[in-house]
Image (tube, rainbow, N blue to C red; front, side):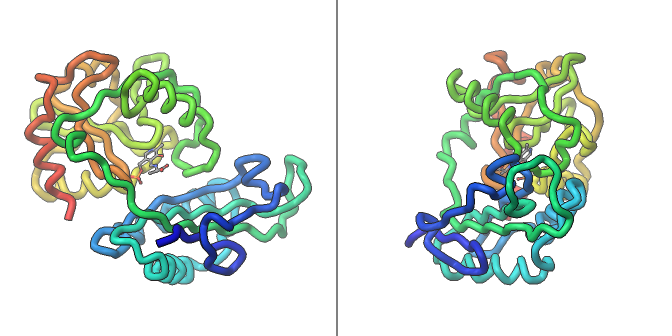
Length: 276
Ligand code: PDD
């Protein structure tokens, strides 16, 4: 089954998709994106993803190229056409195509790209054994709530993690405040309470993060969204990270230091069971 793209109003094999060099996404990373995965063939938490797409678009004064109802239809068509058991949908909107200069014409037509690929599978050992993460300095901009395609700090720091044999890198501020990983949100457990940094301008309000908070709260698990420090994380009983592609992965070491007893914790395992 070939991977599929939707570009310039048609579905084509992903391998054949080309964008013009004057696309502002290519020249300036002037664009936004979403990643949505399917569960039992249906896009999971799609309304939440599309609402965040609108938030990101508003955050960079970008007009979406189509109403959300039309984007939903394109996503459904692409998933059906691609025919994978489970699909990872990537949706990107760039400001449009224009000769390179920093400011942009107000009437530029935005460029929409959708890709449809098999949903990545994570080895089950990662869920059972947990993963190691490293900490890295927070060097990103002050609007990380916008899901921008400008991801160079994330790319650089993720690479550092991989080169150190770890799965993720956690951005930490000079005052020890923890933010999020390069492509995932962070949670920790202390005395049966779930802690996670607040969804302000400094992190992406992860859709998986929101799902877990809602599910945990409904089951009377105490959830505390507040500024958290690296010291608190190091002293936590359990920790885990979340994203649409991985759901939830237990974190057992931070910079080589064991969290709790160095094994995925009981609350983490329980929360993993919340996913349908
Ligand atoms: N990234 N924080 C960052 C910086 C992210 O890039 C992501 C997801 C998340 C988790 O958000 P969500 O639960 O909505 O997937 C948090 C996607 C998966 C990516 O860039 O591929």
